[in-house]
Image: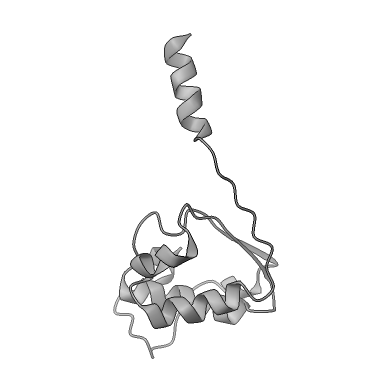
Amino acid sequence: MVSYSTPPGYQRRSPIRRPKLAAYKLLIIDELGFVPLSKTGAELLFEMISQRYERGATLITSNLPFDEWTETLGSERLTGALLDRITHHVNILEMNGDSYRLAQSRARKAG
């Protein structure tokens, strides 16, 4: 999403030409934190979440606890502001356990 949303030569204050992600009723961001974001990518993510704030549903999946998001986003200040917005009206579902993909792989090898 961030790569798709970042036009060549993007600068923070330049007009952004990308689909209106803020307009969708539901936006799903899967595996946030799997790959660290560049400074520009983190700023774009914050911008998009801010535009959607209290306007549309956003579902975010991550294997990281909130206290590790700074490593992905690169800035404590930006991470704090982002978490403030996404945790304001939220239902957090924590799922702990073994990876079902790993379990399926082991079952195939054993069987």
